[in-house]
Length: 315
Image (cartoon, rainbow, N blue to C red; front, side, top):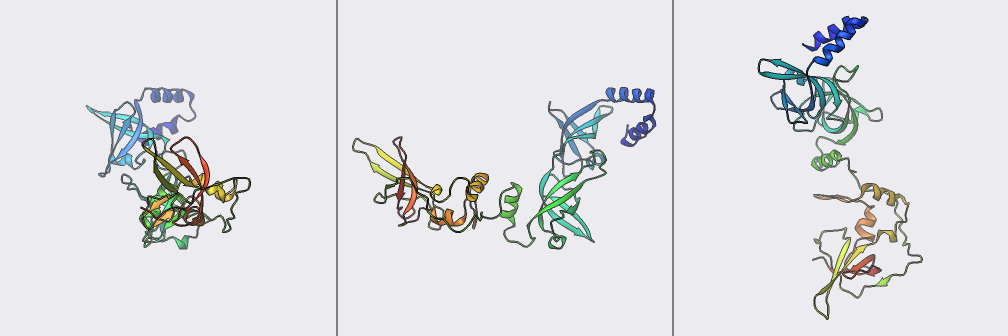
């Protein structure tokens, strides 16, 4: 039974209780399968169930779904061959995604940056964005807002929420990578004045001990340093000194809240997107050679000391 035939029957049964009952019986006896859509380059696809079964999805039916959609589908049998027709969307495989813009004769669309999704999706631009700033070939973050299998939706439709990079931006690979994982594109900006907050804290002076860092000569954010000495009874004692941003950033400060959200620095070729403001990450909290820095030092014995250290050149 085709989708058109089912719609015709539903229209005929709308106001007839007996026929509505028959409709329900037909639905209950129609074989169905639930699974995830897997698209192919040739236009057809497969519905893969949780139990490991796989059903063929013909090209016309694939126009109603996207790779990764979880759907309920009607099973059609033709001799020993089985195929399915997606009928109900359970969970969309595409929500927020990175895409390239297509502008053709005033029409706006996006192509998701996904190896298994080749669909060109009609699009609109978020009200807060200026459409004139987005051109053909630009990279954007978009959301799927309409799906053919959703009630009252006639087709696929998306909304552009953010411009990631212009088409000719040499940093496209890095910016797209950051956008794909919803990571920040720039270092945080949380002020420029960073006084030292050491009130009530007694630090031990470890500047006489030869700490060293394991970094390249070009590294700017050296956040840890090592010190190794031979023990009289044999063996070695290793001390690790870790830069102490709390000497500058009080709990609840904007930089503290932003660092909690970011959780780490992203290292990219030629660019780092730091967890802390650059002045802290690359200067005040970086264990530079010959510079006194607040740190937390922990030897191989189970003790921790708040300390001030001076590190040697990077190894």
